[in-house]
Length: 287
Image 1 (spheres, helix red, strand yellow):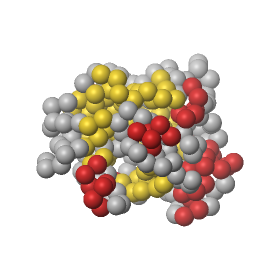
Image 2 (image 1 turned 90 degrees about the horizontal axis):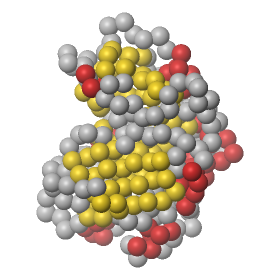
Image 3 (image 1 turned 90 degrees about the vertical axis):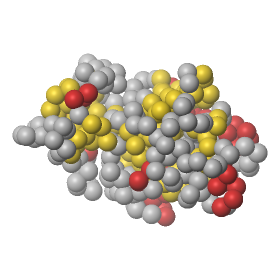
């Protein structure tokens, strides 16, 4: 990653008071941007499938006439517009055990529709008539360069950055349907950080130093470091890209640790991470 003395680059999508949408950049000293962070509109960093989004975000000249000013002066949207969102099930041994499931011998993949994504701060209306809907805090990988049949050794070159996510899951439908499209696909079932922390190609995430935590009404529910992932990020990219081409802006929800918990209207879920790479939290009010 860049030296601590250099700025850290964050990417998001917003709408201003006139309803104009834009990609925006924020710069910090490494900490996650606060509401008073200055943003500026930039070109779409994912426009070139073989390009380097981190370089685009770093070098972009702010667009004339686009949103500019404080982060809290605009309406936040999901920070990327992926062609697909891929989830990884049972990627922590303790989580598989807590739900009485076997540990998979290869990555257990599923799709979430892009329409499930909402930014941190957005309220999520839970569907009624189900017995159990759970929170699942996760690290989310943002793909930067087109990835097709990529070897694990080269996988880091295809990562644009990271954010956090909540893979909200309806257990009733998981049991009933035997596959997870409905269980994990409701509108709002993919809250993610409002901003992506961009990283240069080839930068290796120090998984053992990243502590993922989830809170329900401020009560701690999940707490794990990412070295506990059964299938590490490079392996996930290798396996997924052997099946389907990953495009710039695509998201991989990498799996949730033990401590998933049922959620209900009126509660607030908070997903955070601690470590050398700051990540914007995910805060979701449930209705």
